[in-house]
Length: 161
Length: 376
Image 1 (tube, helix red, strand yellow):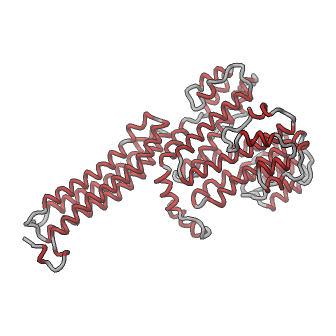
Image 2: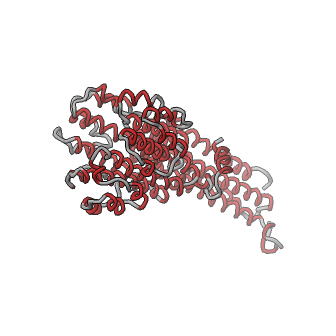
Image 3: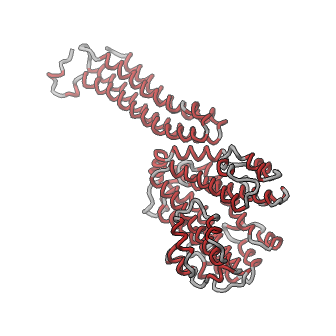
């Protein structure tokens, strides 16, 4: 067990790294989700004004953006459960890396979902028949966050305890 | 590739221009509601097939019934079978204005300023109508029915202008120094006689110039690049029409009434046009112009056949419709697509006006179709 109070530098403290990682995962993912919803939401509303029938299916953009916050929360909570008295510096840095990976990826994916979702809603408002093709870029943006989620979980669950 | 083009554009652009990524980003963040709204509205614009069906209608009432669910429904429903063409046109103008006002309500920041500048064009149309109606001795009530609902000038202000008898005073009160200078050698008698179209075009041209100047001086990046061809071609064609009309009317000194600003119709071309002895030769010289040769293809022949300049307005509208359609395909995040939509919507209003008035006057559907301009 590492007693952080006795260390010469906080950077040697595993709890510091693990806590920072868990915080970044939730914080950056929430910002990413906020960007995604904030950018695509108004466009969905605009599309719904003229074409109420497309509003429900274009909501997929906000749902996908919301999922980013859930991914961040999952990594964040799993990280918090790992912060025990037996935490080593290696595990602490792994948890930090997992949180940063998840958070940063969710931030990028959130912007991607926001911009692509807004364009998808606009395009669907003009030509509803292209929805199934316009939604592909949205799913690809979401996939970026899933890659980070997989990497983050691997970082959390593999390696020495 | 688009970013590469953007970088190339900026490497040649003056330093005052704002960066394209920041412009685009601000449109993504701020205008996504508006863009989705106008794309939805665009999908409801009448297409060629619908115009063809409308032109085959037997009466105005039938057309009004067909359009009752559309964007002009609430205005057209107030018309009856006895409605005059002026009332019909007014109802369509109000439908168009309602559409534009909903965009203004949905817009924010610079885009709202842009739409206000767009509305100022209609002040020029109102002022031109006012001068011509006043000069022809028609009543204020008659003039009021032709008013543009989108114009910013208040009815009280127009009423005050209507009580003025001097053209220079009207131009000074309702316009600015530039309009006064441009109307200098015209009088109210000119606006009543055969030169009425010249006076009207001069005032309308002043309105087009104000809008073009706003785009050229206040907008930057893709906004400016996308809007310039539409507003610039309006200014150029306004000048061309003034020159051609002056030749038909054998009026001298038209140079003083021309719009000093130009886009592709530069001073050398204007000098050439002014030096041409008649309309046919002037149109011939346009057939070699680097930009307008395509827009005005076959212009001389069309003029010889019709002895009217109406085909130029149709050619301009066709050109602007092409530009607008291209904007929708290529530049989703700029005010260009707002202007593109407004151009398409304005054209729809003109087409509907032509169809309703034509059907009311009993024109055969073949003739009606020739009055309709539709995007390809």
